[in-house]
Each structure stands twice: as C-alpha cells, then as structure tokens.
Amino acid sequence: MIEVFDLKKHFGTTKAVDGVSFAVQRGEIFGLLGPNGAGKTTTLRMLATILQPTEGDAIINGYSIYRDPQQVRRQLGVLAEQTGLYDRLTAEENVRYFARLRRLPESVINRRIAELFPKLGIDKYAHKRAGQLSKGMKQKVAIAIAIIHDPPVMIFDEPTSGLDIIAAREVREFIKACKHSDKAMILSTHIMSEAEKLCDRIAIINGGKIVANGTFAELQQHSGKRELEEIFVKLVAEGEAYGA
Image (cartoon, rainbow, N blue to C red):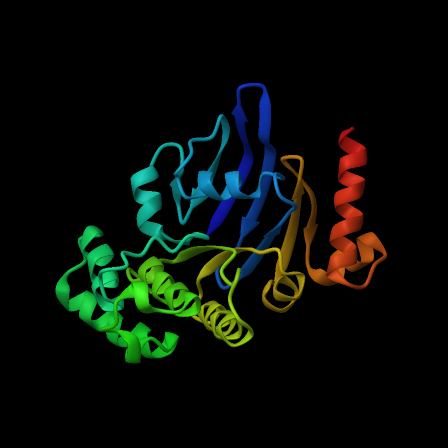
C-alpha cells in the first residue's frame, strides 16, 4: 500500500531527509518515530504531496507522489497536528465543508457522517460550533474530516498530542479499529507507550535517515533494551554517533 524509495529532501545545503526507504502493508500500523528535527515531519509532508522530494519517490496505493500527486491525495487521509477547523462552523458543517471540497456526493457525505460520528463519539456535538468544543472533541472532528472519503491509506501525525487521558484513549481505540478495515496507516508520535501498543512495525528516523526498522521484538533484540523509550534513546544516540 505504501512503498518509499530512497526519499530525499534538501533545503539548500541542509539534508532534511537523506535516503529514507520503507514499506507499509494493508492492515498494518507503521510507526515513524524520531526526535525533533529528525526529518519525520518532512517525510510525512512529502508522502502527503505537500512537499516535492528532491530525489526518490513513494508509491501510495499504486500512485507515485512525484508523477501522480493528485491521485495520491485521493488515496490519503491525513491528520496533522493542527486541526484546521473553522470555529464559527459546527462540527458537522466543518466535516460537510471539507467533504464537498473533495466533491463527494451529498448521499455519500450523509452516509459517512452517520457512520463516523457515533464511532468517534461526536454525534452529540454535531451541531455545536467548533470554537466551543474541547481539544479532544476538535481532534475527533479533524479525524472525521481526514477520513470522510474512506481512504485506503492514512497518516496520523501526533494524533493524541495535548489530549487528556480519556480523549487520547478514545482516539487510540479508533485508530486500532481502522486497522481491522484493512487500511494502511503511518503513525507519528512522541508517546512511546502509544507506539508500542498500536504499531505493528516501527521505524526510527534521525538525521534524515532510518536508523532502525522492525517489530518491537526485533528492535528489542537489535538494541538489547526492553522498553521502547530505552530502545529509542540508544538507537538515536548510535545514529548520531555514526553520522558524525
């Protein structure tokens, strides 16, 4: 579903992403972890066709981000850190607005809202203005917007950042449920326990390069550490030393 081939992004002389490659299968949650400035967000923006790669390519459900960016966007549901909601519109109006931008028929929009709002627990808040919603509820509305078109591939960038325990748990449960509908998902998070619980495989990026990629058990064996936080710190430190 997702194949990334030697992806590079340079800003002048700065190599933000320097030869990243990985693959994500259908029904898999793939974790992309890295410290701030490691190239994680730049990689996700290239996959989302917001940035064009300097070199390399990625194939999203059969379409190239370099040659077919418009088709790629149709395959993707992207949840960014910022919800981007219009405060004066209600939750439902926000979702309808973005769905219409995708030119979805009204019948499809109605059906998807009827499916998603109860699953996300936002049906009771459908007619409340977004500016009056809690941060957790805004995040759920943003998720509905991201997947209203039922995309086969999803990118979640820090989906539970700043949420309280209950809201974060609900978002995690929803992401886990998406896995059973054969979606391919990339999850970026700074919360190690979240990555450990949700991800089938995890890649650690540092200095624009993938320094490790595997299942949690494989990363444990490779690093000699048991906790994902310890694994992360060790492999990032080794990656910095190797790149120096």
